[in-house]
Length: 171
Image 1 (tube, rainbow, N blue to C red):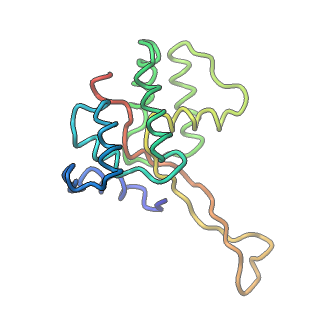
Image 2: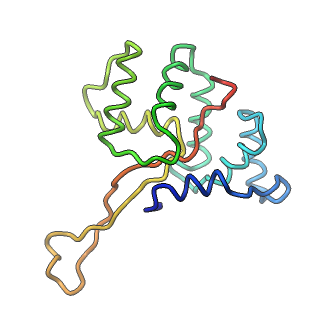
């Protein structure tokens, strides 16, 4: 997780990527799976290097997202395209900006917007389209503010999309 909103997107784009032969055994396998989605080896290598253990950036979850993007019907692909266009890579967005944008694009496509668990559902849509850096900041907990060793708590301040999952030839 990074607090620098533009550094990760710039470093990914400008990163001198290793060759396929330089990847570890596991990375080569994962990159080979991603080559089924991306015609350019460079994109597959980029994505492989962005994987992190488990969770939203884990191999299983990312592969699941790619499979869903590939199985989407024509109308769903149009919606995905418009949503992906609405969030420029390297630009941090807040929860409220994601909610506003996702619901706006859904409405433009004649879709019903979420009426419950709005934040969770909109973030799920956002995360289904991108590899994301979660931007956090540390704040002091109220009950320990006057203490010599105040307790700090990480709070999410935004999200920076750093890699568009939808392959270009699927647009």
